[in-house]
Image (cartoon, rainbow, N blue to C red; front, side, top):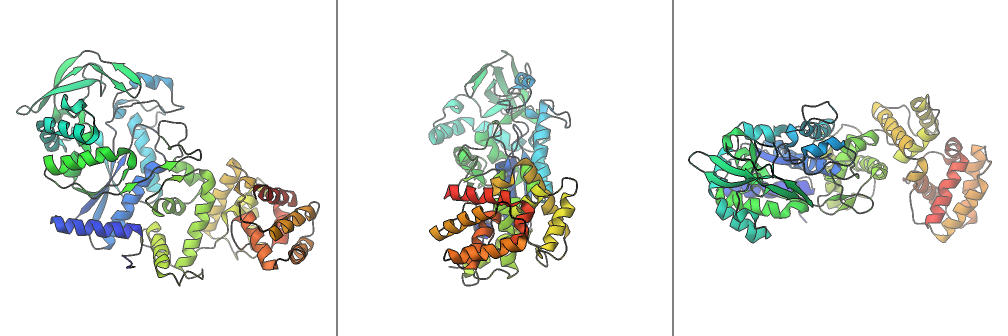
Length: 532
C-alpha cells in the first residue's frame, strides 16, 4: 500500500482535493476551506470537530505547497428554533428571531448569537488554530452574497422543483428559498417570500406563520417588500451553502450525515445555477453521549470543548478529532484519561521510544503523521516526561488539599518516575486534579482481561493489603503472590499497572499503594473482579 504524504486520512483527502482542483483548472493561489459555526445553541465537542478537521486539511494543503485559509462561518443570522435546556424562559419570546438580534442571556456579548459563536472561537483559539471569522449577519449586510442571492431567486422555480425531486420537500415549488425578516414582528421563517422582482432586486412577502418542529408560530399578517441588499433576510439552507461557496471561493467543507440532503441540493445549485463546481466534501459521523443519543445543542447533554479543556490538554482534544473521520463515537469526560495517555503513546512512537511498531510501515507513518498534525506540523524537538493520567488523578485525589501540586511532584520524584517536574507535567497535574475533584479516582479504573490465575492473584492481594503499612512488605508479597499463582512477577505487575493506571508500566507498587491508600487499592481490585 502506498503511503500518501504523512500517512493519515488528512493527507489522502488533501491529495484528492488538489487533484480535483487541478482537473477543474481552478486558480491554486489560495485554497479556502470552510467550517460552519452553529450559533443557535450551545456548541459542543462535535461542533468543534468540523472546524478542527477543516484545519487539518488546511495544514495538509499548505504542506503540499498550496497556501490555504480556514473560514469559520458563524450562522448567526439563523433564527432561534428552540430554547436550549437550562436557559431563561424569556427566550421563548424570541423564538424565530435571528440569534444576532436576541440579547445575550449572560450579558457578556452583543447578542445571543455572538455569545454562542464565542464559545467555538474561544475553543479554536485555545487549540491554537488560525482562522478567519465570518459572521453570517455581516456577510448579508455587506452584500457579499448579493449576486448569488439574486441568481438563486431568479431560478427559484427550477430550484424548487429540484429540491422536491431530491428530497421530497415540495415547499419551495410554491415559495422562494429565502426567509425575509418580517418588518412587523422581527422574526424569520414566519414570513413567506412569494415573489422576486429581479429588476428591483426586491422580495415580496407576507407574514403567514409557520411550523417549527412540532410547534406552530402565528404570523403577524404584515405584508411588505424588501431589497436583498438590505441584509434583512437570508437564503434557506437548501441554497445558502452554495451561495457561500461561490462568493467566498470555498474548495473544501466537511458535513455531518444529518445534513447530507441539504449538501447534495447545494452541490446541484452551485454547479447548475451558480455555474461553479461545489467544493470537495467529506462526510463525518456524529458524536453520541454514553446513552447512545446524539449530542445536541438544544438538549441537556452538551459536552463543550471548554469542558474537555478543563481536564485535558489541547493535544488530547485534537487527537480526538484527528484520530479518524468516519464512525460514530460515544463521548464523555471519562474518556479524557484515555486520550491523554494515547497522545503520550504517539509521542513515544514519534521519538522511537516505543518498540514493536517499526515492522508495520503504514502504522508507523500514520502514527507519526497524526502526532505531527496534532502539533500543527511543528512537533517538539524532544518528548515530554510521561506519567499515566490515572496515576495523576489518583495522587491528586489523595494529596493534601492545600498542596496538591507540590505533593504530587515530590511523590513522582520519590518513585523515580521523573527527575524533576516540567511545566507540561505541572499542567497535567492541575488538569488531573480537576478531574479528581469533579469525578472520583475509582471511576477511572480500567476493565482488563484477567486469566483465572490472575483472578486468584488479585483476590489474594486484596485479602493481604488491608492494614498493611510497610511498602517493602507489600512489594515482596506481590512477588510471592505471583509465584504462588503460576504467574511471572512481570505478568502480575503489568496486570496491576493496567488495572490501577491504564498503563503497562508504573512506579514501584509498594510505596505507591501506601500513598493512594491500601483500602482504595482494594476497592479498585474488587471492582475489577466484579467486572470480570
